[in-house]
Length: 368
Figure 1 (cartoon, rainbow, N blue to C red):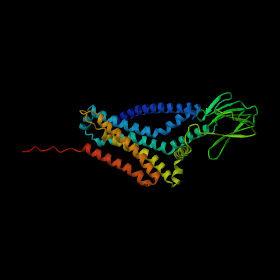
Figure 2: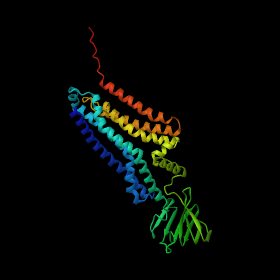
Figure 3: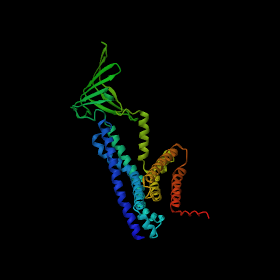
Figure 4: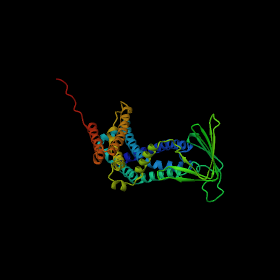
């Protein structure tokens, strides 16, 4: 039995390391492509891409660890069936339920690590990501470039050119701006500029003193105005609506809140977030145990069907957790029901799968 447990633990750990490394590489590849695309579009700064990628990888670790543990366990068991090693273990007095102990030796430390990540580390990582993004968003369209360069915003409707400030008290030096507004072609010049931010997040560039020149297309109409101060609103470069930005900010704030603050808050949204953080380690444990009966394949029939079923089961499980979180957030079900019911059902299915795999079928008697 000692040899059996050591071999199983070693094989699951080895497979888990390979799967985890592969998933991390795939995740980072997809993430970096997306972040570099956002940096090219001006949504984030190129100098914060690596920082956001590292922090985003931390937030993805609980899910990656859960999937790696599930795949490693089911791969180990299915390999023993395919190569007929399971027959040797069964002949030595080892049953399928004896796999629970070595699997738990690997699964329990991983589940504890996932719990630490979801309850403490992941919220901290979300807070750091939000600080990175807020710092970048606080930069105006003008401050994202160096002096002597052109920058486009609002889909090319606005073009800015800035010079280095000659007065140390000025935030921005001389500014040249071209603005397309319906039928008007506007040019604005000023000697200096500064950035003003409102409490609701709107940002404005305050120019002055300077001049504004308005020319109407296909017309001789022309206007010229001299001003001491001229305010120009800076639109969001991503083109996202204000409602979508507000919803996304609320979701990011909820993800970044410490677990202790969520527990003190009685709101449904906070309880839904707690449910998600608690469910991930429980799901990892259930998936590791469920992989034992699901990995029992018939070597003569191949493994494609069983492994496909196992993958769909894990995917359905994670999607149901998301669904329960949405129901709790909307007040359709209470916190305890949404948190415990799904995991209890999966555990019951796991026990039933053990029963069906271990049940000995009574041979049919031939008719006399």
